[in-house]
Image (cartoon, rainbow, N blue to C red; front, side):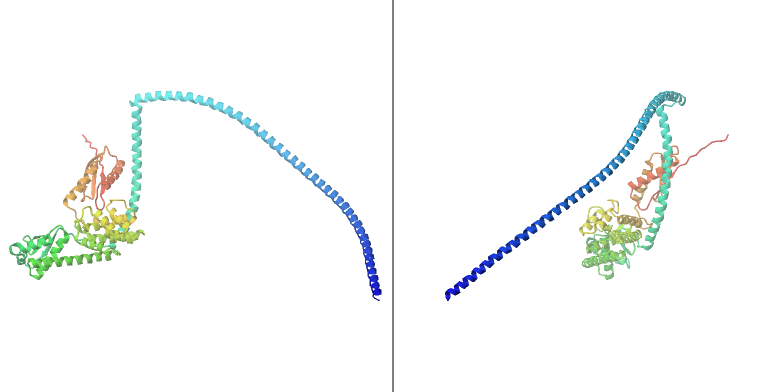
Length: 515
């Protein structure tokens, strides 16, 4: 039974294997037939593609040949056109060359003609020079002058003409400048002066103390003169008692000591007790009172001029100027006036008014110490301002207000002008007789030093100099130049307030007699 089953299974397996092999064979045959068909189809398609590619290639070749032919035709056409243009340009160039050759030939002919004319002109020039030399010789014989002498006369004549023209121009421009400057200057200065007013008291080296009666003089002198000696010793001031009735005169060059002596003496007279101990006490009180007055005067000056931020020591120095005079003019009042004038002028000109009024107030600060230190008041003032680290522009204005250095700002120039205005106002200052005479002599010496001046006279307190010239040496036109030269010399060599008028006079007289 088992054998039968095994046989059956084996038969089934064998039949299956045979069936599979048969199926595989059949499928192989079918696949081979499909492959062969596909290969034939692919071959056919390749042949068709080759045929189409050949056709396309032929078409592209034909198109390319056509494009090449067209491009060649266009190039040939362009080459022909270019050749035509080149031929035209060549013809034009050839024509120009021919024209240039013709012109060159023409110029050569002209050059030969010019050379012939130049030679002719040279020959004529030689003839003219010979003729000129002969004529000059004849003229020299007639005029009895050499060529050099004639040149000198001609140059002299031309110089006279130029002098006349130059004098006319100087007159015109000077008059125009004067008119404009006078108009503008008068407006600004008159406006500044009207807005500024300061008292000017003429002070000297003496002070006077009134006495209630002459009996007080004896008490001031004291027993054997001990009181007056004590007062003079403590103050350093001389007391003159016997010359003036009911008054004592205090004499001394130091205004601060003289003021201390005046205050102390007035206090002693009011107190009535006059002896050395009391004198010493009153002198100390007078010194304290003077220090307070100096401080208050300095503050008042700063307030009146509108200057702020000053060092306290500078304020004290400004206050000391109350007791300092210059040609009889109180220096403190002068400084306040200069400060206000400088501020007003700076406002009118649109400049820095603060800088101008500060420099104006401090411009004479050195005069507060010039009794105690060596040097001019300008040098001392500059040193003091540098010590207190004042504005460099203010220091320059102070240093330049007498022309010692060049002003760096317009405000410094304004301070110069304001100082001159304050000092030159009639009545503000007085001069010593010696300085007055010396200034007049200097004026006349400067005028007499010019050639052609016959005599000069300084008049009107040295504010005008009249110059009489020799008419045969100075012409009317030369008078203008002479006046200008004299004015420049005066400006360079002299220091003076205000201005000096130069008046040149030329007079020609002809006298004849009828017989």
